[in-house]
Length: 258
Image 1: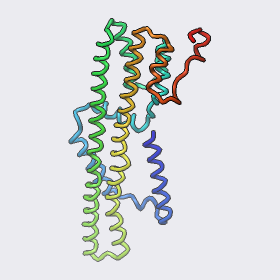
Image 2 (image 1 turned 30 degrees about the vertical axis):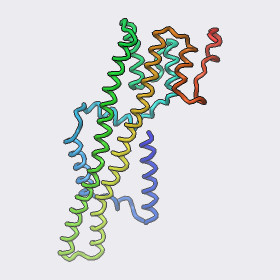
Image 3 (image 1 turned 120 degrees about the horizontal axis):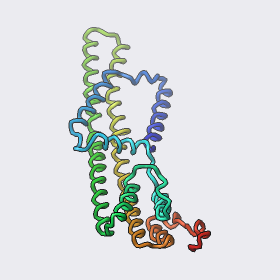
Image 4 (image 1 turned 180 degrees about the vertical axis):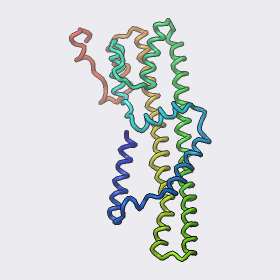
């Protein structure tokens, strides 16, 4: 979601600059430049795509753009509710929610905590490996759009030089020069507004996933130990800042747990 907001902000900047320069947005459109940069970038990304299913790549790409991650404080509250037997409130298919579901199933199957911890940790490592590969793949490919943009600019300059040799007027010369530079503009936009930011967002999201997965694993352990809800609350509060700590005493006072 932050990427979309950022994209909207940069578009406002581009539109404001175009209005100030008294140029229509059509001045920045060129089919040749678009084709060279877009299809060139897609081809290279396809060639060096990591050995991960397209479904996994698309899911992570979509989540980084459209989904806002759950804050640790909010997830701690969800874990406490889960320990109270209220299930998972969030419908998101996240690694931490899957930890709670899988952990409960493994408890029911009779696994001890050491075995459960090993299984869930291995699943997280597999998730982290995939996300890291996708993020590095996107960031690595961010160097190609500017290169293809330069290639598009060269094609435009060739077209310009041929026009000059054919005797085009100065006005047409300026137009063709501007069109040639559009390709470089496309390359810079794709690299620095899409590929690099998405890659960075995935790595940032992975850090949050690791922290929340640890919260989920701690919740599973406390449930196995049959800890009281107050004990669960106090231990899980160690994962949040002091001014964000969860307090369930008021919610549970009617049950006499305080």
